[in-house]
Image 1 (cartoon, rainbow over the protein chains, first blue to last red):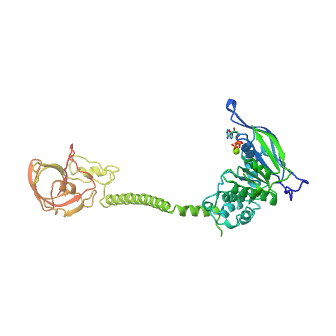
Image 2: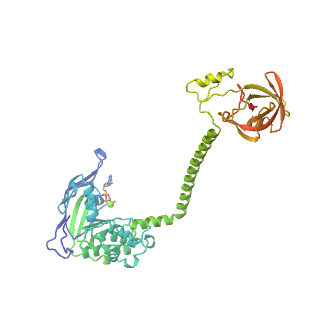
Image 3: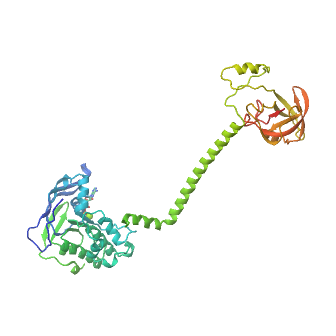
Amino acid sequence: MHRRSGESSSGQQAARQCIYRIEKLTKTYGSGPAAVHALRGVDLDVDEGEMFVLLGPSGSGKSTFLNILGGLDRATSGHAHFFDTNLTDLDDDGLTEYRRESVGFVFQFYNLIASLTARENVSLITQISKDPMDPAEALAMVGLQDRIDHFPSQLSGGEQQRVAIARAIAKRPRVLLCDEPTGALDSATGVRVLDALDRINREIGTTVFIITHNAVVAEMADDVVLFGDGRIVDRRSNPARKPPLELRW
Amino acid sequence: MRLSPLTIKLLRDVWRLRAQAVAIALVIAAGVGMVIMSFGMIRSLEATRASYYDIYRFADVFAPIRRAPLSAIATVRQIPGVAYAEGRVSAGAILDVPGIAEPVSARVHSLPDPKGLNLLVLREGRLPNPGATDEVVANEAFAKAARLSPGDRFSALIYGKRIDLRLTGTVLSPEYVYAVAPGRSSRTTAATA
Ligand SMILES: Nc1ncnc2c1ncn2[C@@H]1O[C@H](COP(=O)(O)OP(=O)(O)OP(=O)(O)O)[C@@H](O)[C@H]1O
Ligand SMILES: [Mg+2]
């Protein structure tokens, strides 16, 4: 569907492709006086291989925005281009194919299958992907090479979240969308999860979006976007990314 | 062949629920067994009934003619569609059975032709000897209700005439599934020589 732009780690500034071009995106739930305007016109350009952190108060539209980027939800108006594809034009089958080929999701709750080991949870996805990693390789990327044959109940919350990340990246998606991935974790465990995301972004060039309520996390990003009341109220770039393992909160 | 993760999940989940799975399988097996058994039972009952009616030559349809002379049989046999006609003597009777205070009402028939229809099934004892005028067999249920068994003697009032009879056996007749006196719902009926 799309050609990969080769090496695109965050260090290289040259000739990066624009992975998302978002224009005047709105999303309204319901209609009439009860309508909820979750997004009121969002514009954003995203270069491939970037690490994005999305901040903002509860209800400001962060999840809604990420769900539209990931093809889980549809915009009410506006455009969201993924390379040359306009996501707002795709039908359900098109969105399903887009999600399956190009998007990895990580949520606050890990959604692992309890009766499958870490490796089996990951191979569930590699079985239906075109050019997947070996499950063991994906688990090694998140630092779980020693816990491959453990069941979710034998893993800590942070380890389970890293299995979920390995599962999301094993199909080599172009983009990894994470909605509060450390929301249920303490600081020490959370930074290891963020470190896994950082490593994936640097080593295989996956574009990463992280929604968080924790402003400290913003320091590990290339770009920080602040949401407020359905709009982007601030966007800034960090001069340098701070390694996640140095973050404390 | 390597199992897919979904197959592994299925097997592990079933193993974890093995007690319930076995219990459910047993319940289903018992249910299926019951269904098969009752169908088999119905089929064998139907086969038994069919062969009973077949062996004892129960007519599919029959119609009685009352108070006709024996010579009318030849005429009846001429009627189109009549496969077989047989004459018999049939009368109401009042029995005086030792040990039963009130009179027992009964219906008395001559024995059917052994080559004809609606043959008797001998349950106990023997059929009356040809020509023996005091021998009778009785419907099994009637005999039981009247507390009669083969060898018993009793007297009967038939057309105002008193005769002594001897029970030689009990029988079933495909004609009588359930014996009831005419106009009443109590016990009756016998067949005689
Ligand atoms: N399915 C829905 N139906 C109706 N309203 C919705 C729906 N989903 C979200 N909303 C509303 O849209 C607005 C934005 O929600 P969203 O989930 O995007 O916020 P958020 O920024 O992710 O908040 P949080 O930080 O609490 O997760 C909220 O007012 C929410 O109530
Ligand atoms: Mg949210």
